Length: 397
Length: 194
Image (cartoon, rainbow over all chains, first blue to last red; front, side, top):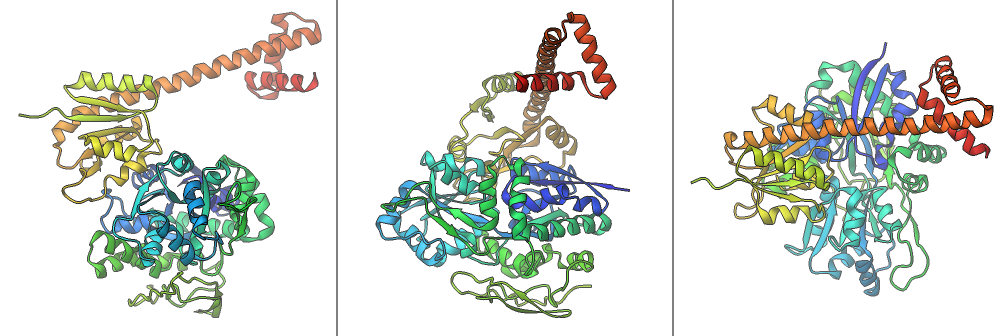
């Protein structure tokens, strides 16, 4: 007997696990009739989840944390049960800005966050940068990156632009740069409006991006539904992770309304930076970004409480909130306990602790687990900083 | 002395905008403005400083408006909030009608309600009109397809119009398909075979 579960999402490449959980029958195997509800804005998605029009949603990782901290004027309270993906976003600049940066010597390598950020900050006094939502990793990573490189007070004007409007906003000179999820960065390139500068994975290799969010208390009340959808998504993520499945996945994501080739490039992290040469350079440069987006494995799906805490720390600093309380609330939003409970049967190995030192891995290295250890991929910040959450991160039973 | 409340309606479609504005004007003496251009929306709204902003709940630009709800310095732009508080029935009515309202902090409930009620009524009407229009459009398209299919059968089999129509209907019934689907399949196949 199947149970109905409505899941809201925003049409982006990283909605792939959601779409595939249904299309590949993983949801059905878990006894779920998954109804997918595409949303044109994060506001509509948030309201749909808050008001019970859907049971679950793909959500920008900082949003549930921001709401828990009382930011954003909505009374909604959500929990993050599962990590849908890490990274998958790009920073891009207008053609005009790219030409100036190229003339000043920037080589558009697509790997070096220090070079890219310094070139960006040096190119213009005030940078107007578009992001999809004020509560997003897009904004957090931009702020973290450019502040560390010495952005002057008032140099960054970050504003909300819907992803589908980014290319147009860039072409019309409304913004100078953007940080957006694929395929919208590549769409801007294909339209000749912009040039890609850096993948967000180059700022923080292990950054959470989208989470599976539900209303606070719902997962506890509906364990069968919660567990079922998490396991279905986990299987979809694992399928998506296999390189031989990427082409098929790209074809199956036709509902995104974007050419399969763009989707396939985003899934494999091989991006075209510009439609034509940058500055005096010739040809359409292509770059490979290892770890551009991660849907599975290496802790990509575990809702690390340390990541909830990191997001809370950044928000607390920006909005002038008391830090310790904020960190505690950020930790509480990421429900590592529910992940352990519902994915014990599937996930080969659970970490011993609910958190880790974020940014400690400049290269793949071992993490202690119940059965010994598992190798986690690199998760470093571009500036080598490590966020070590001082709290007790032992699993809560 | 109360000043007139100022309302901005964000709507690209001119006909829809006029309908909404009319409804608001009937509901009271307000200063109503339509913003049809979504580029630079945040700036436009911040500059004009309205008491209320009305927008279709499904408009992607809502995320732009949400930015305005974040706390800014007291002397800067007004803090706008989404109306979602104690009045659950009205909130649900707004959601069902597909209208989102962003209201400046501190505006009294009794001043907002008539505006929101008028907006809900108009948006609801627009929703109904949209559904009816879609149904009419589909019926017209189906009619055109059926006419073409009839023509194809008449030529191909040398039969009259009534016979052709009866054949289409019988096929649809036998196949458990809709008349429109059968007509469409025939027209498509015929186009390929020319």
